[in-house]
Length: 413
Image 1 (tube, helix red, strand yellow):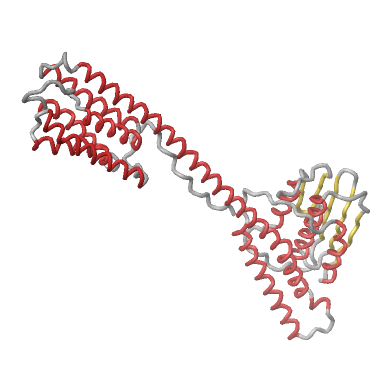
Image 2 (image 1 turned 60 degrees about the vertical axis):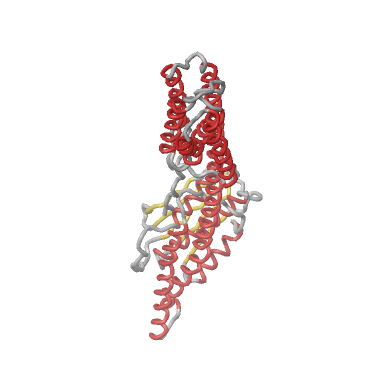
């Protein structure tokens, strides 16, 4: 059963788009921004009142709007842009109405610094588009105010300095924002990679457990079921009460096999090829056959002497294929004669398991597809071998496995 696909993390937003849902800055950055905004407000308001003759009833709200725009830009960029642009447009006309003409105009130094800070914050947090609009509109207001108030000649240098400074801050913010976005994407990629690695380890462990449950526990349970089902034929003069007990044991074993199959369906995954651990091998196949004979099965074994030490993967796979094929034969064709041929050649190991037609109808099979044939196919494919199974022309069922000796995979670390 295929495990449900894990949800993919949302793609990081492009640096070119304004982000209304941007995360707040770190606490240290927030504190620095608050201190800078408060300091600018404390300087801007008295300076405009004393040197630019700005009425205090206008200097306080305009100074608060311009100095506080950087703080407001983090949660509400649009409102902050409106306040900053409005303050920049209104400050020049209400300044220098009563006297001195020696101070920078239409930009005062604290006003220019406050606006540059606002452009820096909104561009870093929300992207270049969010900073470009207030930057253009903010520089347009003082530029229009100079000719309208007859100060175009004396204010040209101030306009150039202010436009250049705010544009430079904007470009630096764009570069920093791009760098921060790249860092965030790399962090997300590392998190996804680590999560995928952990998921892969979990899948491998679940598949290993499922394979061992199938190869060991399910195999032993199948032998119990076969022994209990054939007891009445193997033991002469068996009392009816004992025969009924054996039938209950066989039924319990079949039920356990069904539950085991459901558990294996939960544990197994389709996207994982199981590793091959060196456990049993061809040398243990005669002992395996004897265990089936003790369970009441009629098994004939033909095997060759190995030409030498077999590769670990081939040795284990040959044993597991023989074990699963014999288990299927005694489970689905109880009482039928079984032939097992193990041919050990210089280039490959060939196994052929054939069972005849059972003398009586087999017990009902567990519902749903089994995992035994799929497990055999996985193991054989891992060795670049072939597995064939199906009804034999003379009746019964045949499993034929070809395992080349030249493609033994290394056991994964």
